[in-house]
Image (cartoon, rainbow, N blue to C red):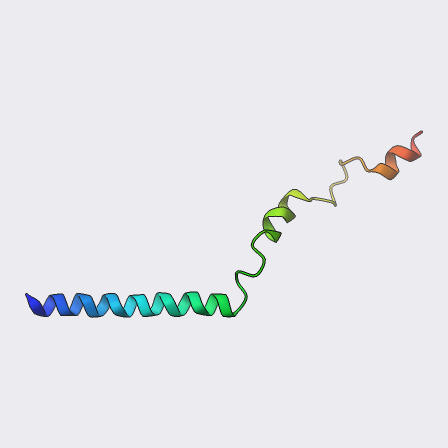
Length: 61
């Protein structure tokens, strides 16, 4: 009974170390530098030809 408990605790410690190493690697490599850029880039679609532009409306007058 105690052998399985020690085995499971050891495996839990190993998994925590692996998860911690993954998080520190992601932070160090810059994965969390720009959290809002990609979300705002979706909303700012400047290359859509159907969007009326200020210069287009000025030419039609």
